[in-house]
View 1 (cartoon, protein in one colour):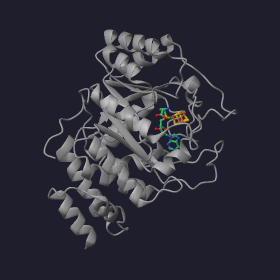
View 2 (cartoon, helix red, strand yellow; view 1 turned 90 degrees about the horizontal axis):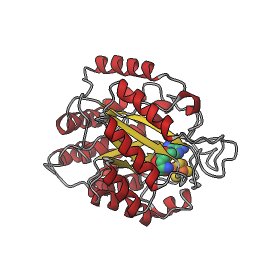
View 3 (tube, rainbow, N blue to C red; view 1 turned 90 degrees about the vertical axis):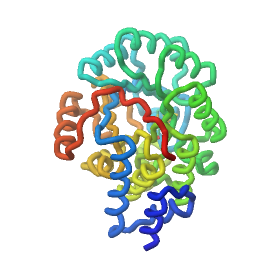
View 4 (cartoon, protein in one colour; view 1 turned 60 degrees about the horizontal axis):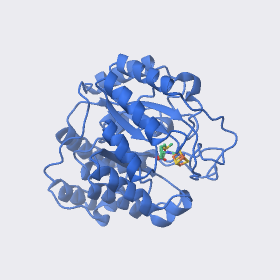
Length: 348
Ligand code: SAM
Ligand code: SF4
């Protein structure tokens, strides 16, 4: 009954708070179908039936940071490092364009080898060559860098807050400050980027109140995108013995995020497919409307190992697309043909 009441009050326009969200996150096996169905309904009304594809190109696995959860952390000496040249990145983008993608996401560790000017030139080349939306995801940089890239034509930026629990954040990201990361997000918004944030579910030390804080933060910021996936322990990190985030809690968090962010783009994350085969389908039925296929060249792909056994590590993009088409046919969901820009945030 508490869950039904919480769902009803949210669906009838009540402003969500911590208590309402933690009630929804506590849904048990019997209640979960109702939660997922409600999120699916809000997804349909908020962003429609179409599923958007974003091609991701992971162009460098060098990182100056030492996040406790991530395989790319600078202290991981057993990871062979790579950097793609500008030409190699353009070739990966050529492939994405030829395959019909309308968005490319350029992602890397925090690698200052690529200067603001280098990245601006890359964006400029892509924008001149193709009618593609460009999303960047290269971590925390200064206002001036973000401005340069926006002026060069970048449309979107992904920078997950990871967790808004300050203590947990500080422990997990020893060389970042939560305040500064949030400042970056505000700058991105101010510069007119369609801004994506997100969190990991099942981090050691996280609890439902923390997760509620993440969802409320994203709502407050009016994020245009939110990446929500399970934490997956990596064997060469200090968190190697931690338990992975659970499938059910991840799906519940995704569903509640959808209820609170009706117009945002929410991916069915690769981390979720890695955790459970079929995770992508479950996510698409619980509020997600985006899939991000990996277009990183195959010869380096296994080195972008943020967590082990990424589900797309050896899969050829043609095969990925085939699988996606099959899945969408089964779900009776069309593939979006447009760029999948942010939906206008209305009716809040
Ligand atoms: N370096 C940039 C940054 O941190 O924002 C972008 C690349 S980083 C690899 C992209 C995302 O990977 C992070 O936002 C984090 O949520 C995710 N990630 C890293 N390690 C992970 C793990 N062990 N399990 C799940 N997700 C992880
Ligand atoms: Fe670097 Fe990003 Fe991994 Fe942190 S999450 S170590 S910033 S790549």
